[in-house]
Image (cartoon, rainbow, N blue to C red; front, side, top):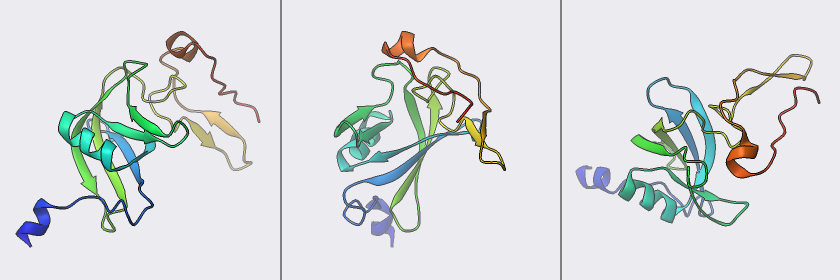
Length: 140
């Protein structure tokens, strides 16, 4: 049992090479974002202490904050019981985890009528940071 504890890793083969990863603010408990990790990004995260994900759209490693400066310093790593999901408790450097300029990617709250409202405050302008405009209009 002791040896098993030392070797516990996400089961990347079970998940087709990618595991779902949640980033949570270690101090406040706010869920910041959902992303994916492959073995390489997981290993780099362990080695550097900074969150590294795998971008499915770009098909490459995504070192959180490499463009925006809003990096995530990993404080704790949890693996779920099935070893197919990871929870990173992080210190968010910069005020935003979301590429649309919000603290959390979960800034849209769905209402009973299926409309939504913005519940977060935009803390940076993505056009300035990334050179492109992101849409987050409150109307559907």
